[in-house]
Image (cartoon, rainbow, N blue to C red; front, side, top):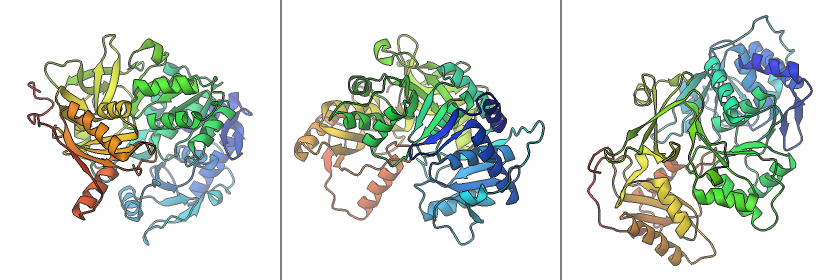
Length: 507
């Protein structure tokens, strides 16, 4: 179905740009379909058919886009071997997914019993297979990975038919057209790249621009302007990097950027104001998940409207309150007729997340007076502050606003326990004395009635998408504590409020 959707666009726009890379490669829609056909033929030559799994270890490229669509055409499914997987993670991923073939463009170490590996360029050397009349695959076409916050990442799978319906619904809701140019800075291993860029562009007949995910912010910012970008999605941290990159001189002309989207993490009002003041863009907030698809958005000028997000057409919402006296604050629960098939081999996670017709997001939202919703963070990251439940990202926003820091990442000392103890990793402003930074951060914690440990570090890890890698940060903390590492921490103490569940009506 995804392949046929691409063919339909190619028939209408055969010579229009489809995929361009910032290093100069470009293909039109007709040429992209031809590349997909050759890649599909190569997969079939290697015994890949409906229901088989193809693992991939690839850099961003036109060929990677073609491989994803070729896998969809054959009725197989693809699974990325993530760039942050070490040798043990890769072995675990291969064991869990059981691929028949690995497609790679670089020499990643693989276990001795790994399936055959082929270079992407060799795979596309096959003669294209003719299209059969009515050729429409509707089954599962991919298995992506969750963040792995409670262990090794879980597989999450989508059917082509449901995914196509969900994407088209969102494209109509956001007003994307064939005249748009999507700029993608994310690795194609993750849904943030494929769903919000690759399929958004190709299903609408727009142009997709693939950047090097490792390029510096100043280079990426210049490329956004040079390619006359009209749409992209990035995380708050990315927009902060662009603001800093532009602060030393005039920003590139971003006047065509009508859909600068931000999803996947908490976005503060200060970050939106900085983007408007320095870059001249008005960020549009979106919210969704790899498991559910896109659920909320705000396509208005969020700065002037001063509102949260509203549901995408066809999505229902409700809040499961965290406290009886705060019906406006709770876990966000969603409803839709087109979601993923859930997690592979994880009955516990499916039971927690997919409950009948409802999808329990695990995220805390606040309903504003106008009925819109603001996402505040994960349920497991709620802190027992003096004034009531406090999402960790809100604490990070306060620290960023009041302290000389470049980034702050707060972790509950005991996830899900609803306590007042916090582990805080802070990237200090190098121009300010560390003692000043530390004291200002501790003052914010004291003001919120929180206790915990403050660690100053310039090495805050991030996921391939760009979010703070909280599981890795926590593991690093635990390993250093077990080894008696001498890294200097600063204990911040405060009177401890009673430890209650956030669902306790007295909380």
